[in-house]
Length: 165
Image (cartoon, rainbow, N blue to C red; front, side):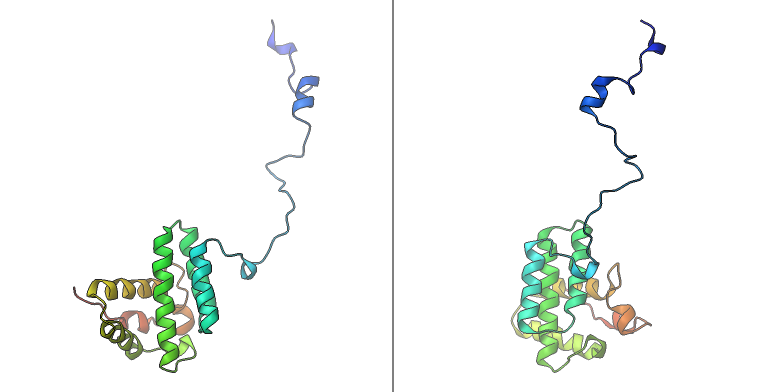
């Protein structure tokens, strides 16, 4: 059989199973798209942290939401998202107790006071160090969620103390 005379594109069988469509490589289905501000919560871990932030009325909820969604997009483990979200929740609730209402007003002394507060609660040094690393990632993360908005010279990031174990 000579293959020059066989045309797959014009056969009736091909049209029955594969109807003619627009070029799929250039057209996309029209969907109702939402802006990133209306983005739904992706995981239960993110929903839990955001609900706690909202219930307590803490500042910086948008930054934490953006940070946690970026962790989810980077395919971080659920435990990583939970741990980093809880560390940022603890830090923001500590800021509320000392009277800070905006993230733009935090200083090195606030971070040091948070570390002392966590140590005074009787936590082990490894736990405090883990929470501090989570805060460091929050402030200096890949997306630089807060650094560019708080201090352009990254003075706060260089001021975050590290704990020796």
